[in-house]
Length: 260
Image 1 (cartoon, rainbow, N blue to C red):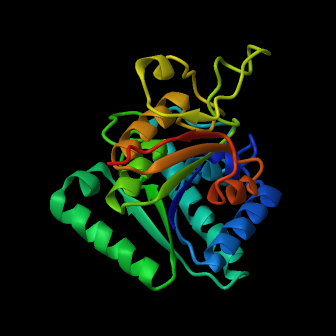
Image 2: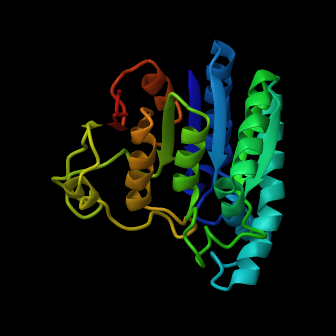
């Protein structure tokens, strides 16, 4: 299978912005095992700003644009160093790809991106994609052409004709109501179509270091489902749920791609 995995800031870091070492190590171990099985992996990873906040010892996610960009520039180095070090333990190479909205929407650039990532996969490398926040302001609040990495992961999945997009979040999936506020909220295991009623179930952002929320994930499902690609939201606190998803077992919320 060609699998795109989107990793959120809350999965990789503590609330301080510092790396959650135990979870990151477990995540890379599972991903490496899936790679060893023969699957193609593409990671869309948030975390550069969050890790930059921790590295620079800031009190929280900055409000002003230059500091956000600076935190991203520092954090992206730390992020890729971490991935390279962890994946290297299992003899897997990683590649960094930083994108802007212009790269996605310009036809020539988009083709170049597809060709580059396809060749990396042929060479058995793991492409790790993030929005280039040091120069692009889309994700960090000025425009919404890409918006954040939930949308970016959906665009990448569609561009590369992935079989499945798996979003690791800080919640188990889509619920009938906000589980943080309603103890009777129930997990929805399967969504056949993202209808207005489903969109109405979305609620606000997760951690104060992240930029997405359930709304962006449902919009991502709309994008990939149109191309026939399934999408699953699972809790990133338990990376071993990735095995269940790939084996077709119930896990999180699965959004079914439209089959022609």
